[in-house]
Amino acid sequence: MKETATIILNRNLPQITDALYENLERNNAKDTDIYVVESGSSKENLSRYCSFWASWEESLDNGLRYPRGFNFALTKLWEEGKFDQYEYFFLICNDSIFENKPIIGKFAEIMKKHTRLGILSPCSKRWGERKLFKDEDIKYFWHINHISWFVRRELIDAVRELEEPTYMNFLYDGQNFRGYECDVELIAKGYANDWAAGITTEVEVEENEEILKTEYTRMKTDEYHINRQKLVEEGRRWLRRKYGFNSRWTMQMYAKFFYDKFFEYYPELEKFKI
Image (cartoon, rainbow, N blue to C red; front, side, top):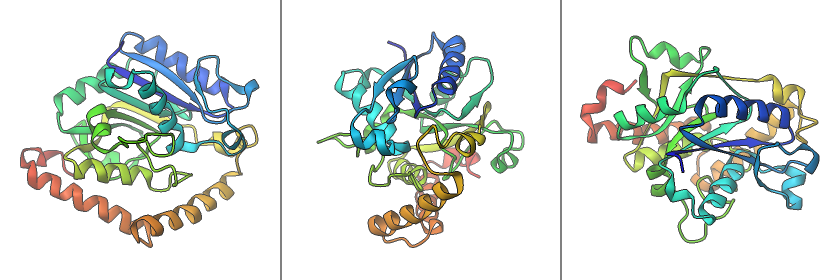
């Protein structure tokens, strides 16, 4: 058993997912076990590396999306007795693009150096956050694009469902179907439990933004602009129902409150604050 479990989320795009798997396997085999979770893929569109298949009717019709998809994989690992054997989980959407070189060992190395870091994200050359780094290679943030997150198991243990874990609640709130602000919600929970979230420039990622725009039919989802509209409309209803917040901005300020408090408790980490 390796120190890290990498989980790739796929829905009906086996060629894209297989290429990502093979890149990670080729460069990181000694550092990670790799699992592919099929988030409602049809049988003919399963990855050749399929580990877990959400094959019930609702999943096949609507997919699991980000929150339910990763919950499903983590729940399966927990049911198989493998969850506690890993120190880290690398959660990846299959539209992530990495360089053809080792990255998992680098993530683990950074995590061991930054012992209060619960979430670590690679940085894109196109992200505006990159301008905040100056001469440093890591900064702590309260909002991070969640296409690929390296997560410490201790953070997951601090916030996950303990009594009846399922694909609806293991880590993310499955009621938030399309994952509106689910990244900010988890980051806020992390800081509330003394775990920071950071971005590093030592590992780079790019997002294939054309996938949703060109492959939505194969993915059995809506066109990009329709999906975006539903994400916001459904997400804002979820946000109001759960938190009483009426704007995305309020949710981010909620996360930033815990972010600022974190550095009051850990002033020695102030240099990593943006």
